[in-house]
Length: 85
Image (cartoon, rainbow, N blue to C red):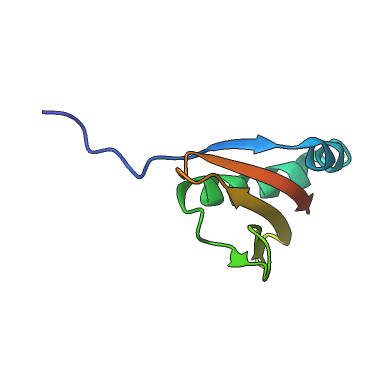
């Protein structure tokens, strides 16, 4: 019998502007952001749609992070365009 697995995660890719922002974060900020990205990879519908675009905007007020991203049509890859922590 196979083990019970959790939801399938999407692969997460950060584009250049997000990578540049990530390089400026402290270790604590990166850790908080990592939790948000894991949540998005499991549930890409967490963020609110940005009107007129394919983007979604996820803000976690507890950890104080914001991620702007979009999800590929097969929901297998999440592209992160902007991070804030």
